[in-house]
Length: 129
Image 1: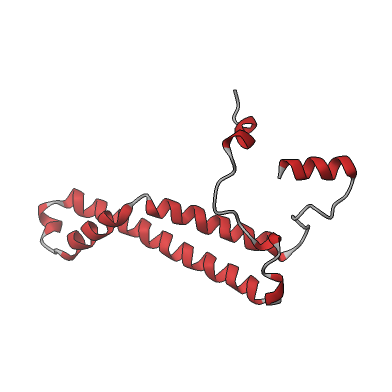
Image 2: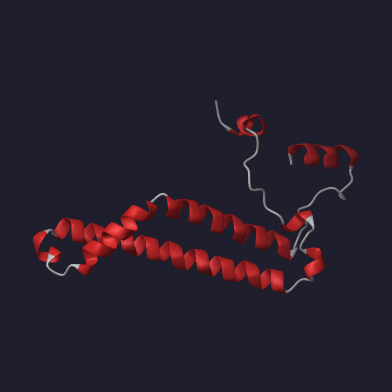
């Protein structure tokens, strides 16, 4: 992306630059980025928390025996449910955007998001020294 920006600035040509002003792809990519970040955050909890918390919350007497664990389970389950709802909402928003454009345009690079991170050497300059 940095090389593309340099080339655009040097040659004053905008045809290779994929971020278009006021284009629905910008909003779509923003939603996909939010979805990815929320999914990664949700995965940090792991499935074991969800299973253990569900078992704990289903035991009524554990509320009286171990209030702190029960309260912590309530908070974690609330956080996980919030992530679930947020991720599903973002998926709906991004699919609504895609449904408004022709299917033939979906393969254009402006609609794609990278699955692998940028090489570290390309982003080292962003880290303050």
